[in-house]
Length: 193
Image (tube, rainbow, N blue to C red; front, side, top):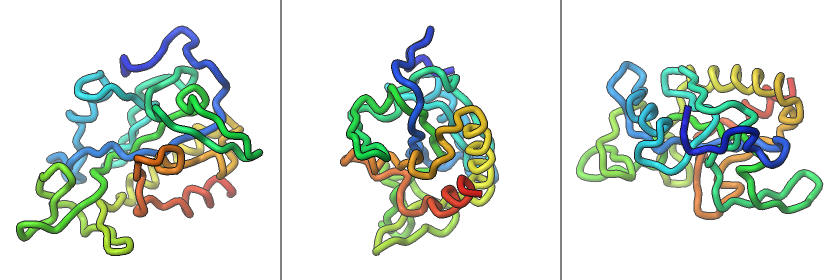
């Protein structure tokens, strides 16, 4: 469980939104590139003052770091325009966070692919969008995410509406996650089925 959250009924408002993020984590050393140690340290509060409810690792493993009824710190400084057109701040108070293990942007420098932290990227071929490159999400990871989404909707039926799932980039101008490689069409189709 992550220490960066309120406890004892810490959620101020009912859940109305799910926010999808990437973890900005470089590849790990297992077959799928999962970086379990780094993610575990983050969820224990080491290195970042943020938290989330779920992380879907590159190998499809799902980690839950906070109960759905608790608030986590995954969307600070964000604002959301609801389905009825009303604008809201305090997104952490009304949402759950779902992170996918992914490093995000990649660049080809010094003869190889590198992540934004300067590390060498040796994963699957990058996803290209308008001349920019990103780590692709793995099929096993997306299948696991869609199963998780189904479980979340069973507990929080309000999240069955595709308009209640947004990327971090949609609620905060300075963010670009989960990026163009994220399969929004598959997520929305799963919610509508």
